Image 1: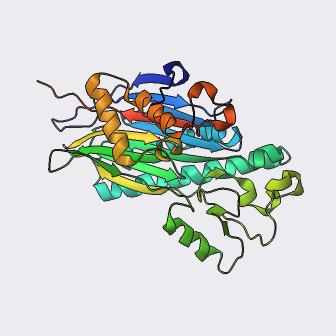
Image 2: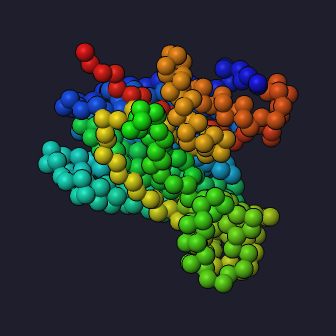
Image 3: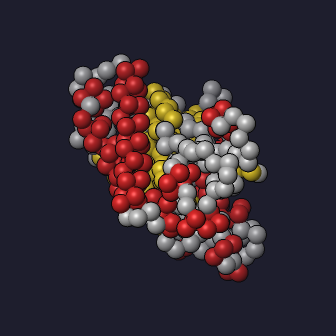
Length: 342
């Protein structure tokens, strides 16, 4: 089996303090330790991630998967997370001491996330417009996922636009570890529901999907950026072969995030949040199994997952790979399980 040189996979470990007690419930994380691995298919890497502790002790995790360049992903790394934090901090019903009901909590979180995603996408368009619509920027985009863990570790919220994925590991009734997807991929090639939504917005339009690619350009149906697929003013001849020809009736992509709420259970163990470079090579249950095995042995689970994904994707010995033959960018983050107190 192909073995990947570990120095080629960047890893990190971070700890974010939590000001609130867990109140005796089993939480998947204690003080929210996490491990991260990153593997780039080109330089500079088009993926990014960030962790932000909020004032009430809750944590916001961001995972971003860029394409066609780094402009959109770097903008989203700075702006989307800042916009989300600003809105979460401003909503006392979400993060205050009032402890709203779960339904109300999810509604407030959803409102904050929709506002943050829409504001970020509009701000990116405004900046590119002011810069004269340079084609190398108008064609860039980024899938984005934000995961919020409440201060008391009882609630988990996911906001997703694109094909990053969040998978929960939990112990099933039979005692075996199960994989539970907390997001769905917004991909026209692999998700029939997204393809149907797109078709419903563009009834009868020819060349809407070409081999699963939206207007023959991208597979994802939601993103930050990709302005030439959202606004006619950015779909210019300066894009060259990237320009979309007629029929052309934008927008084809949306920045609208899809929301998921999960009440953390005693059987929950850990989360895996990763870009599609992992999920395109490994099934959800394989990811959970590899991560669990690595933690049992005391190895870095995120690094083991990145190595396994590369092993699955690489057709030849790693030492003979060229840059264009390497698998897709990959960032993998795990929120580690809480250790039981004695």
